[in-house]
Structure formats: structure tokens, C-alpha cells
Image 1 (cartoon, rainbow, N blue to C red):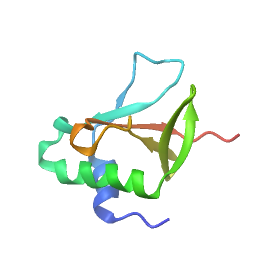
Image 2 (tube, helix red, strand yellow):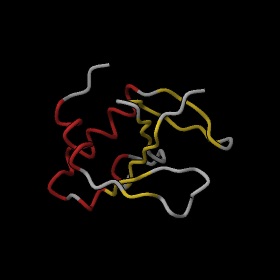
Image 3 (spheres, one colour):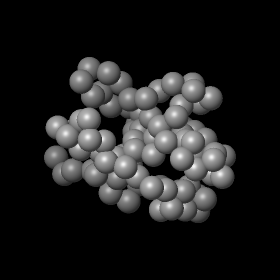
Image 4 (cartoon, rainbow, N blue to C red):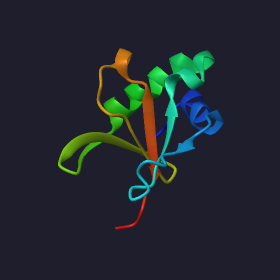
Length: 94
């Protein structure tokens, strides 16, 4: 899948933080207001996840995921203007 250069740049230049509250499900996240200069890229990335991703359940709740370069990205499903976090986790072989 072809991902736009500005989305890849957003991924590469964002400061992803490990989610310490869920060590049993290791993942990282980035918060929208950590990069106010990149808000449009944040929103575009959210929309790319939603438009090109696939549905999968986690603990009985459906989420939309998008895999890019060995990482799985998702949001919590809120409307775009209420989405504040993008999550990611390493893709594991099943």
C-alpha cells in the first residue's frame, strides 16, 4: 500500500510514548496537541487509517487498524474533531 510522504514524515518525526498503563498490551501513542504545528497531518493520518484500514476486534470491541512498515496503527473511533490519540503496536507474526 502506498502511503503519502507527509504521513510517513508525521510517523517518523512524532515522539511516540510507551503506554505504561497497559504493559500487558504493549503499544505506543502520540497525542494531537503534542504537535500543534502538525495538526493537519494528524487529522490526515486519522482519515487514512479509517479509509484504508481493516476492522478487527480487541477485547470484543471493533477497531479499525492500518499496517505500515511493521506497525499497526489505530484510534479509539471518536469523531475526527474529538480524536486526540493515535496508537501503534508492533505487528507480531501469528
